[in-house]
Length: 360
Image 1: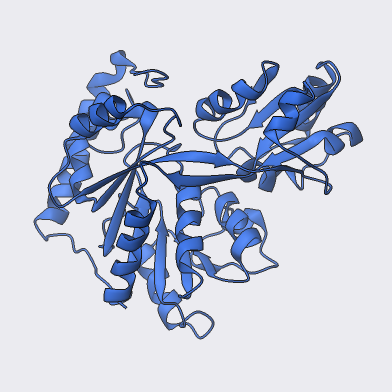
Image 2: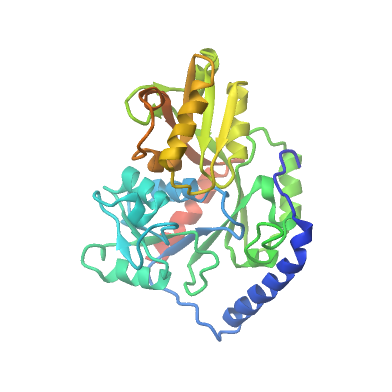
């Protein structure tokens, strides 16, 4: 498959086998009822994956927010990965990224006036707090962010995301590959979305993936791609489109701290042959030393030049000290949204809305 990003560390396969034994034991305890899965009367939609990061969870959660928040009080519950706090936290306008995590903070900045956003590693406890606390008991639907393996909660609608460039049937368990559990875990999903698809996929490409995933009759399969908006200055108001980057022949420092930046690099490359990627680890908290590295990398690019980064990275760059005035003026944030492909948007939206209405 073109653009396949899967890499297997075969020398680690024995460790993957041992890891798999533990995963199977845990899942069998839930499947047999020895460990209890809790259902809730309120509609609960999970958006997750069975791989380590990079499947586009945040754009798809935000898709559901935009779809549902007009008619329902939506709450998003995340574990708040890499936050510096413990337990349940309800986000508000004063919340710091360090307290709730970068992705919840990003959603709070964009949708906090319309929805509730909370973090709790214990998803059952988090749902109970959202539905009983005075500040949030008007919640009508809960979106679980990345809880496919958190089986203590049994969501009413389970959405599994699969990266087109990392089809799970070709991957291996951790640590040799990036699977969190065996491929048959996909059978818990009601909906499977193959994400980050190239926009020019041919009908044969769709059929190959459909056959490879081999879903059950009760499961629905969708494909999605990423749609990029107009980039806006992180420390200002000026904007630039990808077309303007191409027409103005800007040199781009593509700054990312996300799990799978390869797709973004592929998507940007047609607009600019002068892209230099600067890749940091996923959820990386930038330091003063990083700021100097970014400054130097930008200075090394010919004029005209800009720094292009993601919304998730912008949350961590916003408060970074040490960025030079030139870097601040040159840094733009590129928004991204998920888009359902194959003219299936209406069908997908109706599936989600029908579930919420019938379980409200």
